[in-house]
Image (cartoon, rainbow, N blue to C red; front, side, top):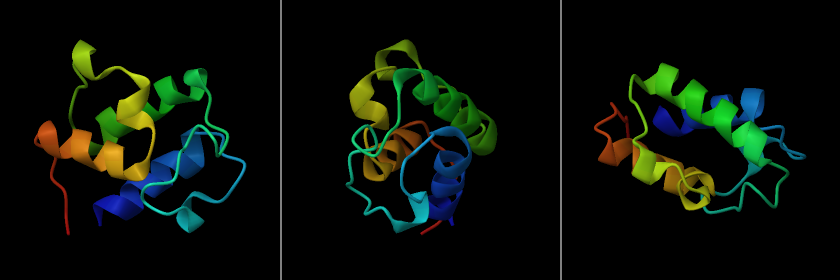
Length: 83
């Protein structure tokens, strides 16, 4: 499932102070410990994992601020997202 894949990326790349599997979809990932440097790692892992490329206009904090916002961005990019 896509939400599990997103959480796996967050667990391995985001440097969160909490377990990504326990976060609500709308939890602020930056408040949970993600830094701007970690955001780049998350973006690259998402691009690899979902076979997409984030365009320049999507490279902003809001795109990566929560699991829900990441899912919306991936859907907009046409990523294969399971229910």
